[in-house]
Amino acid sequence: MSDTQLEADVTVNAVGSSCPGPMMDLIGKAKDVDPGTVIRLQSSNEGTEPDVAEWAEESGNELLEVLDRGDHWELYVQIND
Image (cartoon, rainbow, N blue to C red; front, side, top):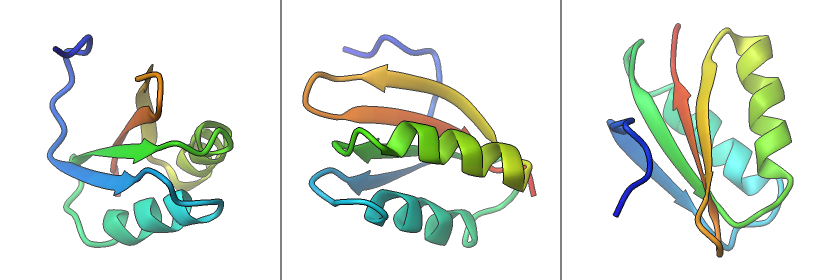
């Protein structure tokens, strides 16, 4: 059961990956998708959220939502460029 209204176009599973793995996976995927794409990044690394928030702000993308799933987080990012 989901507690978000967001629909991800692409999912990047980086659960178990240490820093900077989740960010690198997200950035790599962001380069391969069209503007408007929503990526769901799954990560168990607690440093991922602030890193993604900073990257999104600096790159012109948008961190839409962060959900705590207990054993990992789901970060929804819209790619704008």
